[in-house]
Length: 341
Image (cartoon, rainbow, N blue to C red; front, top):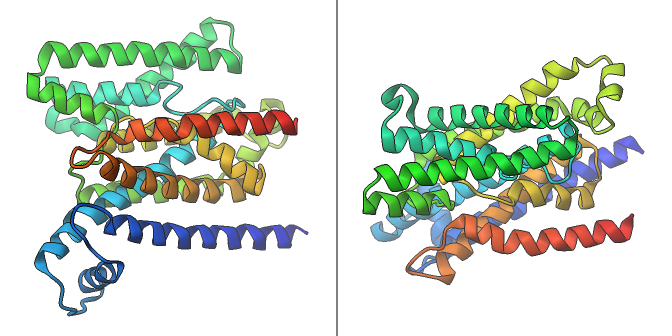
């Protein structure tokens, strides 16, 4: 029975990766300039396999320099944020936990803006380092506020909401007080979630961090299963509850900070996708982790493609797109869970 479930989970993951590859290929063809899927294949083969297939230089530039990096970063962001939501919901035993709701994304945004606008830590930190510190501070603030309020998983969410509002206000204050008009517009657009201007170094950074996070989550899948039944159960199984929780929360902070520093604060991916994955494969994390990552990647690729096309030539911030799609989906999932209860 267990072997059959493993085969089913592996088959589903492979099917999802195939859909993801096709989604990226089709998404790259979409846009003002007409590029066929065959041309996309030829351009990728030229760059990766050294093929010498004739293609137009303009199409090569559009695909290789703009659309493909953007689609790959979108996929990495969707997978990474989905993983963060899965980890947080298991560790905190709260279905509403995700980096956006708990203020971690807002803290990362504040850290990145402090570096980008005020130059604090400048060359030493960089945007990713500033975002990571901001995410850690936000995490510490949320846990401190929750403990001051008496503890409990519901208090963590309430503390997260307060933290989100605080860091959003600080970020807005810094931008309006210290950035010029052009800078203000650009930063506010980025804060809503933007994949404009991403390049191959961003692809390498996001992909490496998300792949490492996925492997760590898979290795810790049995620990996440134990946490889903409570701290007492996890401790009775021999886990160091405090150490494991701290390590996995630091992992979510690193993932969130890296993705926010590249793409801004993107909400609802980490909130919605783990629930959708549970409907498909159940609650065991050895299947839930890869399924959530693949679903999140597919979701973000299509949301970003729609954001580029619907309001062309002005792209819609991708964070607005995830909210417009994620909120109705989340309401449907809540309704289904209530009927199933």
